[in-house]
Amino acid sequence: MRDVKKTLSASLANGVKEILGTCQSVGCTVDGRPPHDVIEAIDSGDVEIPSEVRPLSSSSLSSLSRRNGLTDSSASSCAQ
Image 1 (cartoon, rainbow, N blue to C red):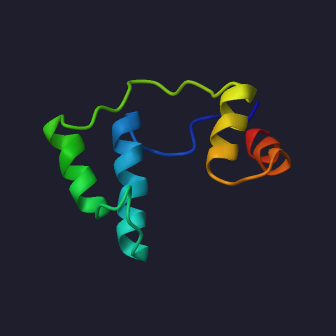
Image 2 (image 1 turned 90 degrees about the horizontal axis):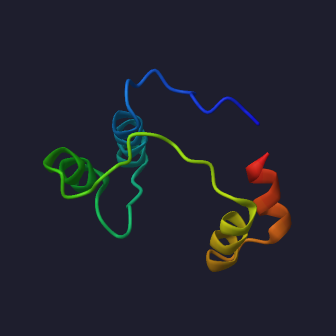
């Protein structure tokens, strides 16, 4: 399995906010909301980010992939 830590952020919440900042820069939305609103929700405690990353099981990854219209082969390449 690959090394999970690929950021200099001290916590998972800060890593998520780092990614949300990138989303804001390129004009993405997150569940239909501007990324800055999600960052503010994390800061206020309205959105909880767990303290550690837990890898997805193969069945969970397949389920998410099917729900999002991806094939099982693309899901397995993401899990590697």
